[in-house]
Length: 168
Image 1 (tube, rainbow, N blue to C red):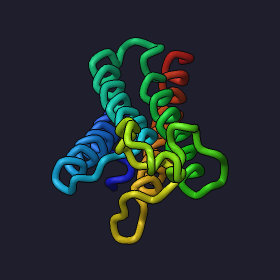
Image 2: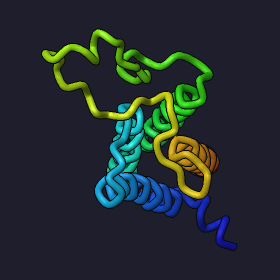
Image 3: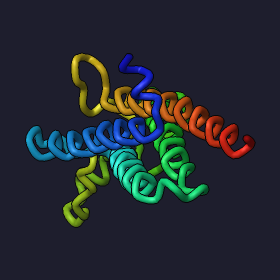
Image 4: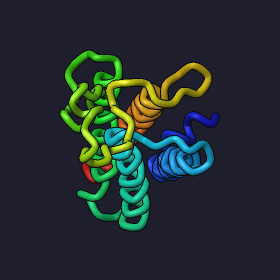
């Protein structure tokens, strides 16, 4: 069965590496091809997927070390928490940081001719880009939840089998 092969720790790392690289590259491609400028929290999520990819590569290379097996799990947890935070900001469950809020100009700012050019980065508390009716923030949360679930199952079985082999 394919699920048994996917739960194998090395195969799971390769699978997560492919998914996280796909998420990172697709966000870059959507920025370039569709001219969609990501918000600040989207950039952090994008680089989080890159860190997950690097952690998987590092763990595959140094799989014999004991403490290295937790590196992808820690980075996946970071991406999961951050994408959930971004989802909450986008849906107004909690307040956004000051740099991420939608700020409307005042009349004085509009009449001022000496006004500096404002940041053109879109705000984080609005939906900026959708695919099939799903915001990219929700999509990244679903993907990060899925890879967290798969990797936590895989690492639990990996540590359990190694513990039982060392015990005998």
